[in-house]
Length: 262
Image (cartoon, rainbow, N blue to C red; front, side, top):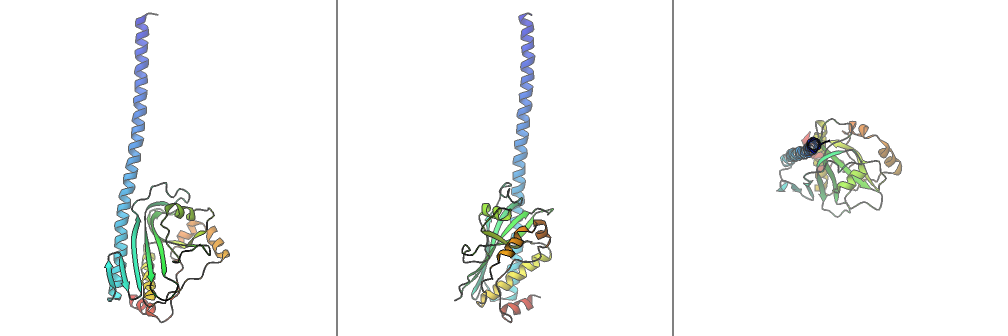
């Protein structure tokens, strides 16, 4: 074999190697571009979701102001009425796709809503998380109200309360053992359920305004086990059932405000 033939064969081998490496790099670049595009699409969806949440909360604020003109609006995110105050804020403008890997929730963004009661009672109020997510069994993402509680002795002053820690929220939504629990089923804020969400928080504000909210009774172990073993698909299907809430005395401002709302 001559040097010329060896050189010709070497050139062919090098050419083939160059083509293979170029194809590999192109495939890698394509995967990276698709990954970036997917993240950008999720971020755009999160931005749209936060705009939707502003509309949802703006409608609630407008209805409160209409029914109780004496309400003081300190900001688009905080209202006060006598002894009660209601506020909300965005906690997570964007949530990475893998953040809820344990539970299988596909969460894009997160916020919270809080009701505060200033009174001589020991109960200061309650809060709940708002997650823009597509839950298992759902076909599209939406805002969900999710309230949490804890085993006796581990709960904060607010009950139920919002979970602002993504890692803990994912763990609670999964089947892993935890001293934290979801109160009731996640409430999808769409259709009639959105109206129920508005109505309930208006009622809570009315109760807090006159200092009538009391701490809800803790769930017993049997109820917790039942909630823990309920398939999430069933919980989503029955999500019109709101999370448990503090008691309000009959015939109070709550009832009068509810009547006006209806």
